[in-house]
Structure formats: structure tokens, C-alpha cells
Image (cartoon, rainbow, N blue to C red; front, side, top):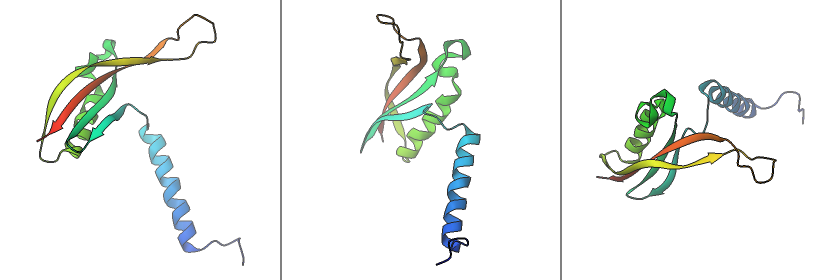
Length: 113
């Protein structure tokens, strides 16, 4: 078996994985929008926001979150509750000191129609 010339299937797979990786890097893949909890009839989606950049309603990630709810509920959805979720911070190496808050998250609980 000659490993210098991999089969077309392997070359195609490697090319597809490479393209997906490049697309992810160029699109800035992140956890900006996440489905925190998902049930058969709805769930909770959260997204990052910054107060100085329009708050939760002005966040560019809000549209992505609404798209995620539309994808989950093609027949429509109803927002049950919205609010800020507990933020997350970075770790601090100094005992007794909390890390800086690195992001704030807004959550939307929804049910499918």
C-alpha cells in the first residue's frame, strides 16, 4: 500500500474538514449564542451582550438567538421570560480575589407554538 497518494475519499474528507475549520475561524466561531436548556417544546437560549454597546436588546447576538429559536420552533415560539443570566469570570491566581467579569449573558426562555 502506497501512503504517498491517499485515496480520493480521504483527500475529500481532509479537504472538507480543512474548509470547515477555515470557515469557523473566519466566521469567528464562539459560544456567543448557546442553547442553555432544550426540551421537546422549547428551551432557554442565551447570548453575550455589552452594556456599552446597546445592552441586551442592541447586541448583534440577539438576532442569532432569535434565529436559533426559530430553527427550534418552525411553527413559531413565544418568549416566556427574559433576563440577565449569572455572568462568568476569569480565574484569579490571587487567593480571595475574584476574576474580572469577562462577559454578560442574556437569556430567553421560550416555548414552541
